[in-house]
Image 1 (cartoon, rainbow, N blue to C red):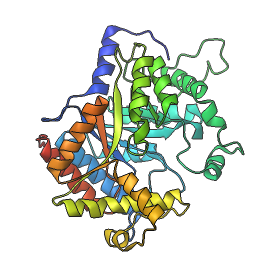
Image 2 (cartoon, rainbow, N blue to C red):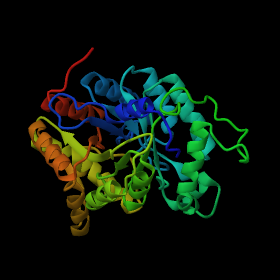
Image 3 (cartoon, rainbow, N blue to C red):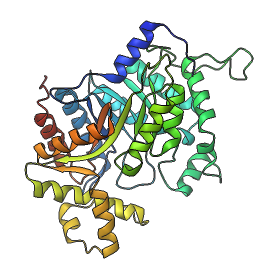
Length: 367
């Protein structure tokens, strides 16, 4: 990425990235959405629920609503983030919308530049482009997406793909480059170079270091890689070099969080997500089970160990307990933003959770 740019450009981009902490929250709070599909429901209902969630998040002062790319998972309907984000943009007016993320190795950089240029044209100044280097699926599906029998090929080339994507977004290939006469249309319309801010996403140290070296904002997947969170954030901050995008590091972490009116209900809800993850990790992906299914499931000792370990990194309980847990996590990690994800069975429980968290932080109500 080019490190040139005016101070006004830098300030504008930094403000778009940082935002303001709502109410009495110590840092901005945001939403990570996998568009999960519960047992007995449909993808159509889940997508409608994402619209409700985005409206709620906008009304209550959450900073961003990101959608994560996954494939070949029956319980996750977010295979096409750009399509979903266009739909969310049509139903909101202020909240930032973005990918958390688009898996860059699955796509040609030009396609991503065109998709997110289109999104930026539809919702100027509200789009974030978060990029990951994992496939967001299993190896066979990754091969089908990329039309190659070498599923790790794209991940290994991630820095080169990122550089190419950035050139397309900025429309600044050198004259001698083979792509110099190719333009991503719609082209630049807003931002330091006329396009959405680029974020790097990760669950280990690779993207943390790369984001630091490039001076980009970094989002870490604490919700499924908690033991790597602090080492990755330390590496990001140590590697950081000021750029036209940021003059100081900016780190967001994804956090599994679920608030309910009663602690027992919160546990019933998060157990559905834990069982779903257990099934996924053991090659049995499916729809998110109901709380009744999860409670009745006969966990083996090894399975119980897995779910207990998974839930140990989820912040759940009453609103006050969730606030306390989030505040402790933010203080321990020094995260500049917390992005909450509630991957549970029911849309009502998810919406209720984000409302309760907003109440716990005295976040404003807006029309």
